[in-house]
Image (cartoon, one colour):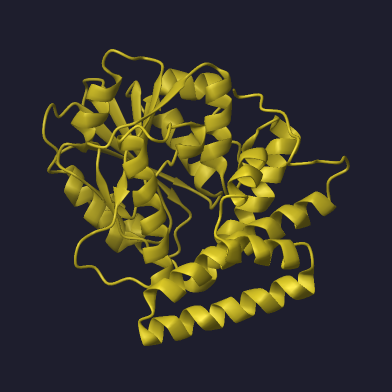
Length: 331
């Protein structure tokens, strides 16, 4: 570590992804602008050789490695911020590659606006093979990025994606950091509390990173279900309006998605049968290179699994929650 206190701390949680972490750390060595930043890597209980590799690693920037038992991304990021020395915190996931000016762009976005939370895009790399479910996710994200950049869509706490985001350390600590009870949507939950504290959310299209996700189809299918359960918990326990927004957005989805949710979500048998059918269609569409069919099926599957998660969490909730009539406390 250097004796001079850095202005910026890049906090990276990692778990068993040495190769992609190495790609990220190499890219950070090529950052343009002032070199007064540190990188805090929190190894969240990796079972491979990541820890030994990190201990032996030498970098041109200050690298601080923290080791902990596996506690999930929220706990890892909390620990990283506690150990960080910089006032500006930039969160990066271990499967992104930042542009050479990413740190400079985040710093510039905060220079005259201390109460900002900044999100940068995680873009699809060129000439990189990935399955249809990853391409579907990229398409949805890029469409959202383009709408925010064109000011057709407002950046809110729901776009606080910590794969590439920044805020002042003092704001993070004052809000209490991530809630470690959330293993999914923990960034959106924290974003909601930051919004309640008066912070403004901004999308900065020039703070770019390229995203190399490696999720299996099974792991991808767990995501919407867990988001559904997490957003009921946010609504019930924190007063968040995300469930209300999700219900409103469902009304504008493709008719296939709306119909599948209406007919199947809430019934474990119908939900499992429909999900299995869509999984089969996605695999067949991939084999036949029927991209539109795969995309429609993935959208329907995502919505079905999200709302099944909502229904399952609502079953364990002691009081009635009506997402169509929920309050909007963050507005």
